[in-house]
Image 1 (cartoon, rainbow, N blue to C red):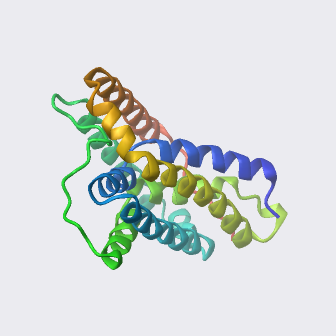
Image 2 (cartoon, rainbow, N blue to C red):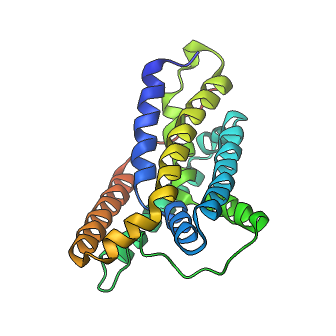
Length: 215
């Protein structure tokens, strides 16, 4: 059985990941501000489904592929670092936008809202890297039930991610209005976000570890 220390560790890392703006946050905020909280929550249900697919694939042994073929893992890691650097540049460049400056989106029906939330999450390299390179490191083969450990650790991350994202959806309008009325706060938020993203990208690039998966 998975240890409480491992669950706490993965939950803490999951909190850091979800608080770092990325495709999920940008889409959920935009959808919530443009189309309302109900649309945001339906989109979040799609995001949650994407998390469940990831953790199911990981529990089924997907991480073993990256252990057996390190080059694939390295390519994904470097691609993820490049993506984080791109997000950092979007935040830091002159005229850059904050995640709480919503994009203009057309109103979509519930089925499309769910589907777009699902697709946005599945194509999010930040989440892929989390399940490939971080989650397996908290698995202890000596405790047995590796698939069950991965499942429980993944559920801990999902719980944190959905809780935080739900709060973001419910408060997106207020946060966006607050920042829109305070340009200085927008600049501070963008610079802080960009610095954190660039730091994560650098750490990811310099990290020499490789994904580990138990047989």
